[in-house]
Image 1 (tube, rainbow, N blue to C red):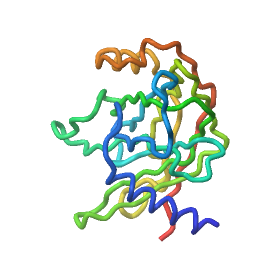
Image 2: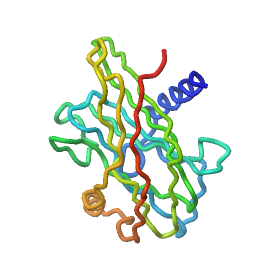
Image 3: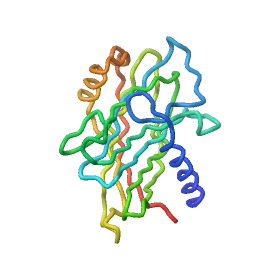
Length: 213
């Protein structure tokens, strides 16, 4: 089971980091979901990496509960180099964190976060280490005409370092940065900021392990 899960997420990661950009965050747009204009709700939040960070690629998957395929969902992702002037898609960059805000239109229904995956490069050969984990029981509701705020999904290194100088694990937590995130969306002229807001009360504290070879 472990190897099957690792393989499936590796394939998801390869698809993820070659996909097209979504609304707000550098995300893969939702697929397999039929949205009727005027009935949609919004998935709102941010995705970030704590600084300093070795992670240049990081994403969280979501899907419709009860769907017969993981394709009925999408990916929240953030890609960064950490090199000043090159990370042009960032929405915020402080001495503590760097990331993007997202507002994604979705049909009403019950959804869940499925997994988190991150990559950290090493050496000069272009290699990278993958970190991943399932996200258990992380369900949220999208309601017509409302924004569901799921917080700032922030990744940070944890645990001892490997021979490459990379952490052996990573930690993902949900932070409440609602005021900051909606201010960014308002500045962008996003229509989701005008909708009533439901806050997701789920507590997320997740450890990502380096994947098996």
